Amino acid sequence: PLSPSEGLFGLDSLRPAARANMAAALLLRRLSSAAAARPPRRSLGAAATAHFQHLLVEKKGAGQRVAVIQLNRPKVLNALCDGLMKELGEALDALEQDPGVGAIVLTGSEKAFAAGADIKEMQHRTFQECYAGNFLAHWNRLASVRKPVIAAVNGYALGGGCELAMMCDIVYAGEKAQFGQPEILLGTIPGAGGTQRLTRAVGKSLAMEMVLTGERISAQEAKLAGLVSKVCPVEKLLDEAIGCGEKIARHSKLVVAMAKEAVNAAFELTLAEGNRLEKRLFHATFATEDRKEGMNAFVEKREAKFKDQ
Image (tube, rainbow, N blue to C red):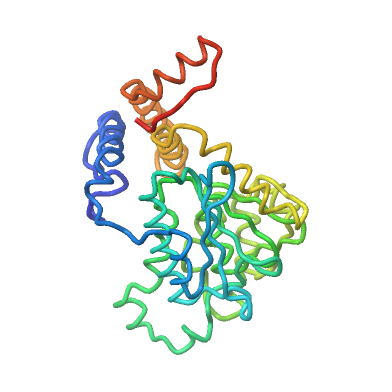
């Protein structure tokens, strides 16, 4: 793995064009060697989900190609304790290694996606403990998953819950969902990306208002602002999110990962650098069997049969 000093692609010292070229090469190398490089992970078979204390994990959709992770602390509105976040990382690691899974849906309950971090767990922490222990560092695992993750948000997505949703690639919301960063009301600020991802999603003015006042926005307001891509009736939300996952999962996993990498790079690179990276990744698809199959199937007027190669 790259060290933190190496920057986004480990190429900060190179010229922009070289960075884009090398970034594409590194992506292909990571994708092709991931299975061999990583140690075996926990299997998520039918019986394995019982091992998780704070999560429910199962496969859904056509061919069971969509994994659904449900946050499961209903008595505390799915407050994000350290144990839950560690389990989430373990589940994501296992699903990354599962060749049958093409997309992941993250959801909570009808009342709350997640109402925030577990305040009782952190209220007595000191600065020294937070800084020396790199508090919240493992929360970023969700943001680094290569497979697409869809958040299905019902009810409250506040504080850490809102941050968790924003780490996902696509956000669907139930009609009664509420989003907010109310940390200011507790004498602190967002610590898991809230000030950064919210600003990129909705713009400076609305993000600043939400962070400084602690006020919430509705699902409809979130969609208008660009935080949410689709608002659904509460009872149909999960099915809609799984349906989106099914559409993604039928494509080449290798090419989907490239597409996700390119879109995410838009938040880190300049426009010129991003365009160069996109072009190199586009060129890289021509080294895959799935690109050949996709184009041949189109010309032959048949359905493509991708092999993730």
